[in-house]
Image (cartoon, rainbow, N blue to C red; front, side, top):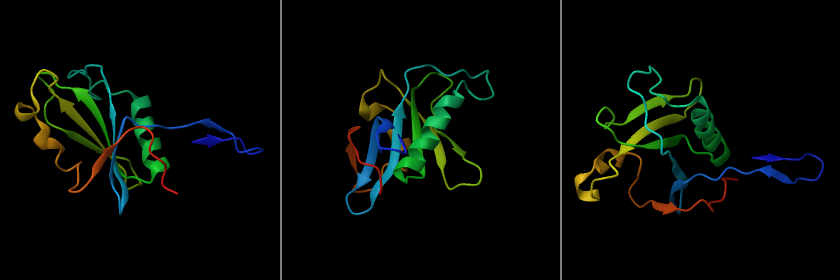
Length: 130
């Protein structure tokens, strides 16, 4: 993310938890997992501003406009929520996963839009788009 101007040393490197990539097209979506519970009473749902900055940074760094935060599902949080970054094509989605359910019984259907056909999951060792 940041390099020193004088010698090019990388100081801060962004590595997302999950990236979805099509080999021919590159990275199509980035997901970052969070292990905190959100707050229904908060108009911002308890999503931290720092997490939104992080996702926007991932989008810019990897040339990917579809990014998402993944939180544990609770009674009040099941369906995905999406936010747009003003004056940009970046969409930040918030997904909820029932950690106690099997994949067959969980809300994985809501992830279909994030996981394009033919994409593969990568580990944090992905390379940024040049």
